[in-house]
Image (cartoon, rainbow, N blue to C red; front, side, top):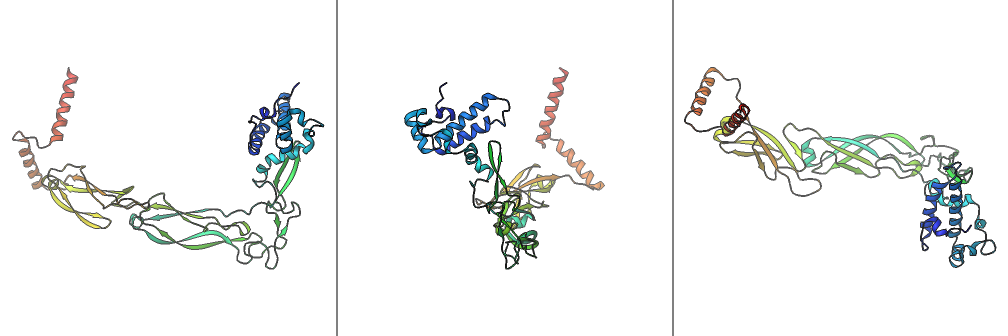
Length: 376
């Protein structure tokens, strides 16, 4: 039975790069490996076919011979047996080494772990968030041991190379077809062991402490914004870089204002006399009080805009506005005389044929039309 073209077996074109060959074989091997397809002879044959194709095309000399002479160029006596470049475990270890060795391809040991990032929730008043401020915070964290400089070894000594893995941090294990690498159990992947640990940190290279930091909060921050303090997180493992500290901003609820992006909103109560006849009143802003003119016949819910009295975002752009929503208050705690005056006022309002309450009149007209429609 004639063999299939090796490029066709791997599903690549004839000018595929080494990386493309490796990727194609990895995909097929993961799909067809006998451990994943027990009792499937068809998958096993395809797996062996893919293995042979990769072994040939991954070797520059054999690939050149195959490209020129086809299968005859790489058969026994014509360029060498397909398996002559080593056993399968070597091939598989090369293809999957980046998975089991953390991408390092072997050698050099495992990288020391960078310290963890930390988060601190900082609550601010609206005024401080808008204007900016500087605050001091105290956080619990792990810091590099000053006694051993983060090495974990007692002063005057130093970590020793691990004899189990030879300082690589990984050990190779043979499991059937697989040649796998895993973290060294003796040094936990560090490549080094500490024979004489530091008395202060007990070989950890870091200690738990509290530290006080000064955080500069820029003007215009809002809920959910984060400030990153580089290197202020937990200390790294045995001298590795520290993580970062993220200060999460939360703005407290304000008694007068509600912020929406760059704009501020507030509710301004007015008497029905001011709403009817007009007038002026002082309203608060973050910069002090300003005068707001209320025109006559103002209805409840009317929105007034005070330009430039809002917030300038930390991300830049124009300053927002202050939007004041007026609500007309109903008078309470009236005495008898005041109630009589209101009744007289109401009688005067209903006479003369003029509509002084347009919304009420239009609503009543709508109600009447609705009821008449039901009767029909």
